[in-house]
Length: 403
Image (cartoon, rainbow, N blue to C red; front, top):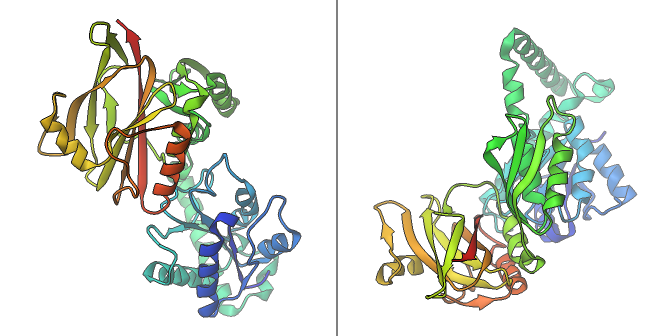
């Protein structure tokens, strides 16, 4: 094993990887394997990764998508096991499932240039290079390590021994707290199911032997089988039900899948007062009461409606449109904080989605209020609009029926 670095990345992140590689080399750090990882992995790249002192895994929204390419996940599994892994989070990407307990650094809003964020990453790599792969403590390669490295490793051995004693004394809960819970594992799987926006029922959450899924999906059976496979073989049997999952048409999928990639949790910023809404025959309209509890960190917001036909409407393209509701006959209310309520009217039937997008900046190339586009066009626009910045999505669904 040699004291060099490999920057493991996918093709979509090649430009930013090249900037990082240059910065590392300018700092005197040897970097091997400049090319993106492929599936199957190139033998030369595989050999470079196997011999690297540190492997930087560049995670972006593209590479963390479990429905997208899996080459990077497979390429860095072995380095993670031997202690050579260092995750680098780009453009606000979430830590990929399975790597949450490992060392990582978040570049946040790094735009790809030579700035403080990049300098901080270089410093982090320098510190990791001093330690070497932390899993090879006391291994067969110890004779090739210099005396300072040996002392550091002996110190690490002492730390490991102390941790073992703590665990034996009853501090084992510290370890299990860092291990993903079954609920966290389920959420990660749910967030990755295509054309679906699913949650675990707060009552039947598996603790009583029944785990109920709620939400919408174009193939509810697929969602059920995915979660059944996850809980199978657990410490106690769990029955997974999909009775509360509504089936929707595939024409709505693009308007779901792009926001799904920005979903991190369900922060409770968006809800509808009732999941079932009646459409008045005389008026031809259905009225849904929408409740927003925007987080203080949400500097911008936009609300979109998704119809069963696949059409997407810019209900509220920005905060200005939200504040403008007070001039309309929609029962608008707003307290001194970020709590808003208003009535939304629709003229169609069926399962209807509301999508809330919040972020640290205004959405670029935004559309005027009440603009209507197809699901595919909306997905393409949202993908481009959220390429940079810190974005979060929430979605809720309600059913409009004749009354």
